[in-house]
Image (cartoon, rainbow, N blue to C red):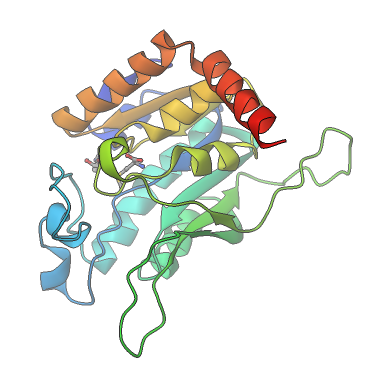
Length: 260
Ligand SMILES: C[S@@+](CC[C@H](N)C(=O)[O-])C[C@H]1O[C@@H](n2cnc3c(N)ncnc32)[C@H](O)[C@@H]1O
């Protein structure tokens, strides 16, 4: 069986097959989008070209980002069906996508067995303006569930926003070319109970793992790239060494104290 609170190096689909049924309480993942342009030639460029502006130091390449539309839906359906099996009944699946792959992602989520529940936009503060165009300033989180969502208005019920705004990581914070902001991932995790295991088959720089530690949850996940897997596990070790959840909460309290 795959291990808890460790990011394993290897292929997600093979790794997922080793996890028992109903083991995890949330799927939160940012798979390779295979995006970056309208044409096949655009998609098959290096990830450092597609997802980074020329002035930033290039990040290492990552895997799995050159599929065409049909093979992307097929592959997404394979791993999503495994995730459906692994999630407990009533759990949520949160899957990132951009505007180009949104329809493919919602198709694959449903083909994998999930019930589609909605789309949550992530507004990135700094998107490049383009002449005579609307800015592409959002990415999207496809929200789905395994079976019914508990909609009873109990005191323990959570009422979450339908839109999040966070700047993408920059400078020293940025390890991966498509890294997500840890604050955004922490906020999204609120859909799942504290203490549950959060599954991320495509860990990249380990943002999901960091957010899980900081919010009192466990994580399981995979990363195919040696370089990113090492970087993600280093990041996790640093968080754990620094006191994980408690240190982060203390910093947050200090910040709110300063503001008042
Ligand atoms: C979009 S990135 C995730 C970035 C991550 N959310 C972060 O904040 O750093 C997707 C990652 O999935 C990895 N990947 C691609 N195919 C994979 C596979 N079959 N199994 C495991 N990981 C894979 C890529 O190497 C890449 O690092």
